[in-house]
Structure formats: C-alpha cells, structure tokens
Length: 84
Image (cartoon, rainbow, N blue to C red):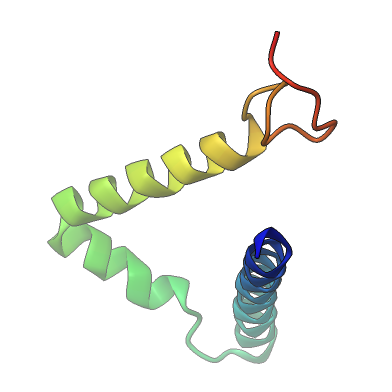
C-alpha cells in the first residue's frame, strides 16, 4: 500500500513539474513571437485581488518549504534513518 501511495505521489509531482514546464515554454514562445504571454493576465488579477494573491503565494511558499527543507531524519528524510 505504501508503494502505491509513493508511486501516486511521484506521478503527481512529475505531472505538476511537467505542467510548469509547459507553461514556461508557452511563456517563452509568446514572448518571442509577439503573442500575449501568461504574465499579462496574471498582473491585472494580482492588482485586482491582492489579498488572494498573497494567500496563494504564502501557501505555495509553505508547501515548497515543507517538501524541500523537511526534516533531516525520520520517515520523510532521504536517508530513511530513524529519529534519534
């Protein structure tokens, strides 16, 4: 069961980074070809709803901090060593 959950998490993270890659590729293409980039839609939304943009930024920061700078020991550590 843990392997299935691990595989699901791995595929979810892979899909998330794949989507980010595609969005960045579209942004690059739009800038080089003169089309409207995604950032031209994001800026007005942030200015219209600054509180919502702040909450989204904080949640993304918390999630990145949790997964990238997690505990050095324990079940979620890369080495898998037991806590002391």
